[in-house]
Amino acid sequence: MAGVASASAAPLPAAPASNPAARSPPSFLPLRARRLRSPVVLATRTFRAEAIRTQREKAEQETEVSAIEDSFPVREEASPPPEGAAAAADDPLSPAEDDDGWAVRLEQSFNIFLTDSIIVILDALYRDRDYARFFVLETIARVPYFAFISVLHLYETFGWWRRADYIKVHFAESMNEFHHLLIMEELGGNSVWVDRFLARFSAFFYYFMTVAMYMLSPRMAYHFSECVERHAYSTYDKFIKLNGEELKKLPAPEAAINYYMNEDLYLFDEFQTSRVPCSRRPKVDNLYDVFVNIRDDEAEHCKTMKACQTHGNLRSPHSVPRSMETDTECVVLENDCEGIMDCVKKSLASED
Image (tube, rainbow, N blue to C red; front, side):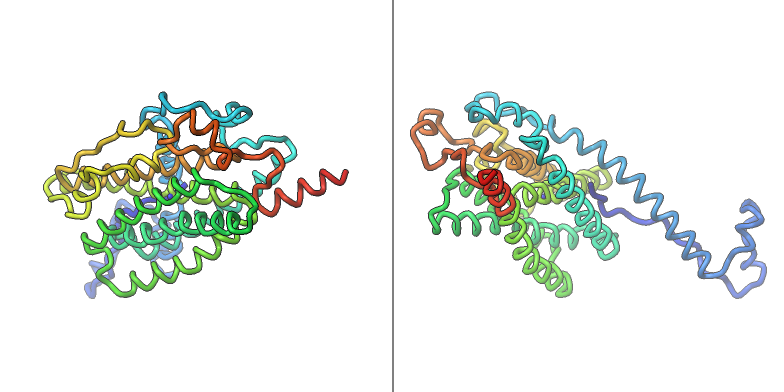
């Protein structure tokens, strides 16, 4: 779905008063700080302090994100991965071949730079408006899964290959993000038209960018989605820690109750590929529980996107081992391609 959650910035220095005595700086400030009182200097110092705060929060976020992989029980009862994918499953970010190392590093560096740039913009626009920020995040978070399904349907139409499990899981992921969006709308995150315009305008271009990226390199598209989901996890986690006591006093939105307490949770289990179906049933007693559930959903999205970066590694949680052995539609052929870059590379290798 590295990042920085929205948080209240430190208060700026008060405006100078008309009384000359009031304009004199506090005595505990250094002499140099008392002399430099121009707006340019204040802006520079404020920007520098903000940069230091951003770096500190980024380091804290990286520490928190490292706990995502152990946040829930693993899918112990799930079927083993296909032969040849077991080693890659331990570290899906590791390339299958040493020759792909430079490509992986290039893709991930670009994705991290793009994610950090988006986070800076969101921080500037939504520093003190949490629900509006969440509305924008959830509107954008739905886009990649719809883009993945679009490309997979196109490939299937052309008769190139089929990815039944991929389509099922991505559809379940989009439905999960859709209900997150309904919750944020019920909380008033879309009350300002500027926020609605920005979210939908960004989602429009994000869709076509994701389609192009997925056709070029699915691994790169999945890693970018993982970066977005990691930021979402960190954002919700920090919001819960800052506002936990207040959230416990507020009721859960109707959209959250209808989703998490529904009798049919097949799609809810479907997107959590690292878990056994029916092993996670969240409680929804108040708004605090709702945000904890959303945060945990983002952690599951993050793990699923990481698993997708190993070609052919994704399996539906509801897949039965016997049906997997007989369902040739889900078998990844040795000579198929993972995006345009992989197809070009394999064609050049076959010519040699």
